[in-house]
Length: 230
Picture: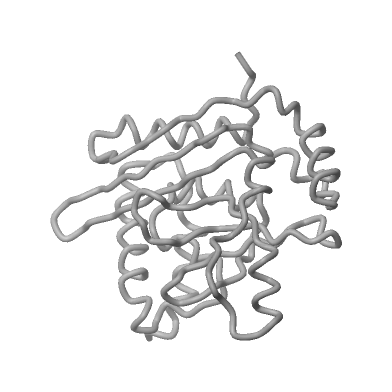
């Protein structure tokens, strides 16, 4: 049996916290298997360099997850509160082959070029929202940008890297809308009213159900993005 990395351990702990908590309803979940035949992180990065022409920064090796399919789609309900979340994480080498959905997106050639450079690292097939997070892969970008795409409102660059994305996922557990905490958007507008409400509920509920996590940084981010409402 493969020895889990620290990143994989944190993700699996998050998965078990959802699965074992009686307050959480699980619609679907898969803890995933480690794909050992792909080799260690160094070998995976070598293969990515050969196949995709990009030499990823070595700092990302610490979060190169090896799960074949690691996912959960869940809900928490209580009076006045209904939280839903989902995540689907796969082996980085697999994700590098998953292009963004084949749709017509972008009004300019630069936007269409950007969209073509995205490789999906997290998506939400159970809920059918069509949202996904992706790495922007370019030969001259050893630290790929992380982008979040929401078909309803557009595409946003997140201010975290791949490793930080997985760390944030472990805390937010894929609550719908969590990505906007790391995007340069104002949650004060009408199009984000429900997202802001859900994130406020998440911080209240998660502080009770999962007290082992520090939610102060997320509260600060939410407050920053809610300033337009004041």
